[in-house]
Amino acid sequence: MRALFSVSDKTGVVEFATALKSLGWDIIATGGTMKLLKEAGLEIINISDVTGFPEICDGRVKTLHPKVHGGLLGRRDLESHRQQLKENGIEYIDMVCVNLYPFKETIAKPDVTMEDAVEHIDIGGPSMLRSAAKNWADVTVVCNPEDYGKVIDEIRAGGNTTKQTRLELSAKAYTHTAEYDIMIATYMRTQAGLNEKLFLEYDLKQSLRYGENPHQQAKFYAAMEKVPYSLATAEQLNGKELSYNNIQDANAALNIVREFDVPFCVGLKHMNPCGAAIGKDVVDAWKKTYEADKVSIFGGIVATNCEVNLEVAELMKPIFLEIIMAPSFSDDALALLRTKKNLRLLKVDMSKDDKVRKQFVSVNGGLLVQDQDTATKTVVPEMCVTEPKPLQEDMEDLNFAWHIVKHVKSNAIVVVKNGMTYGVGAGQMNRIGSAEIALKEAKTTIEANGGKVEDFGLILASDGFFPFDDCVALAAEYGVKAIVQPGGSVRDEDSIRKANEHGIPMLFTGNRHFKH
Image (cartoon, rainbow, N blue to C red; front, top):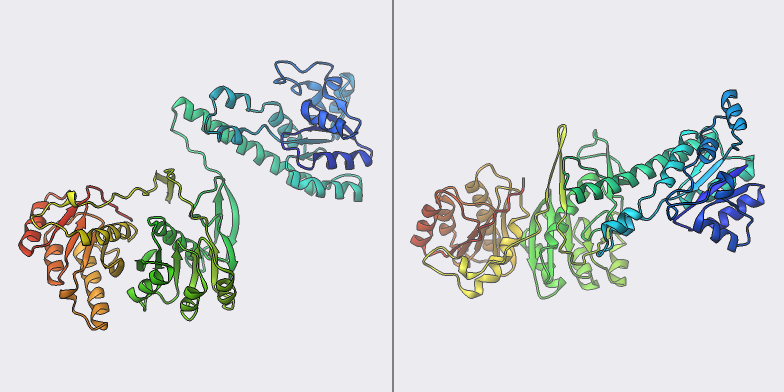
């Protein structure tokens, strides 16, 4: 039995080759792999001794030869194949142990040149993998070091790998070369300025119990690139497996958390924040978040950009929550929260990253692709379009409201005060409907604490422009102190005039944040 070795990832290859040799296999190897195995004291056959031809073109051509591919592709069950191999002095090759040049790692380098990238495109490796994989009935193809142990165990037990294992390894080899070709095609198409194709690669992270509803099947796939604020790389420290809806909601919460550098906390239900707040620390932020909507937070998701310490854990524990996400948990907080066995605790990488990535949304028979909406303008006094001007003391709340409203389903209205949401109006078919919901919710909360909404001085934010002046008129009834919105309506002047009548400063950012 003969095996051909040519690997870039040399993890475990010496041990694997040593085990094969001990089982009576001959090993053929190329270049660096041959050097490594010989240095380990193994007797290795040089690929040039098999082909009768030297490696040429700086190693670009060494295994592209009939004595390699004939040995791999020749069928043992066909007399005509056996005869042809014999006539041409070709011996069978029963195993290929190959993985490919590190193209992905090469193009990830910030200073990589196209010349360097092209030199790391493997040709012989994929060819050998595909030949061996095609003839899986007779040939074992190994491209992942994680499979070395299973292959050796089966050969020790039965003299060869099983047919089922060879089929599985064949599928893995085709997947390996397909992924490799996609990386190369994507890179080369980018260099050439071609964009009529889109290649996506995701690995199964987990099968889910069901999707949005129990009658829908669902799976969770992770992208190859590791990114911050991602559930795909989060570490689950406690609780049941995440569900489809958990993942959707938790992702929405993480997108909101990403907006803030100061201590911040958000409670979320059904893809919308039900309470959010900034504070002097995590305890203060959580208290304000909870006070914002004590009812809706029941069964919700909480995310913070601060470590969850024991003090805040003691406040969260009595409340029924599905998930708590944070960059870290103190040991005593973790011990306390783990007493609730079903509470999911997720440690999430929240490192800052300014890279703009793509967002994918499936539609029937197609896929929508856009840049993620990660850029948020800072609201500044110069954006004011009314005669009344905002007070400096209100600028922080105007910014807070603007950063929150972009994450509320359109049409969206948010009202805030002192770094805390008091009302959230989401997803209504008209903007005045969202405004009514947000302002009534704020009134209920304020009056429950003995205040009067008209005297409170709320700040209002809208994700889109006002098509009419009715939202401004309603805001005035509730004593709103300042408004921030994108502007851009043909009726902007109506809203500006109404704001002037009521003495409400209104600022136009020039950017909308629709979220459908």
